[in-house]
Length: 137
Ligand SMILES: [Fe+2]
Image (cartoon, rainbow, N blue to C red; front, side, top):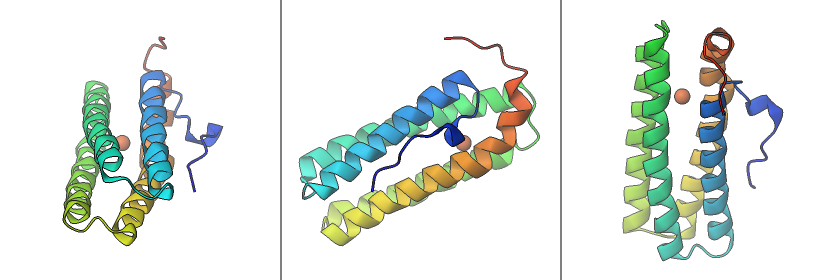
């Protein structure tokens, strides 16, 4: 099942929300490809794009957190890094054994990690930062 974007995901920080929408879009694309039978070329292309974009987004988010002196900046960056390791491991398993079970596990992990991360961890800084970052674009 795809992630349906609703207002509960909005942090109110424009560039963070834009990134999150892009990540949700990529995860949903992956979900669709897996549902369609999991063509490996297409899975690989979307997973590569997702890994790159997640990296880019995490760096942006961590820069914002540091720039405003957020207390939990270091812990938050660690959560991002842990996710990167787990994701790397799961992608590795999928490369070696690209069966449906592993692809579904990867898709489910991505969906639950990102939604939980936004709703729990990102929301911790969202309320704090909303008023401190000038809105743009
Ligand atoms: Fe985050």
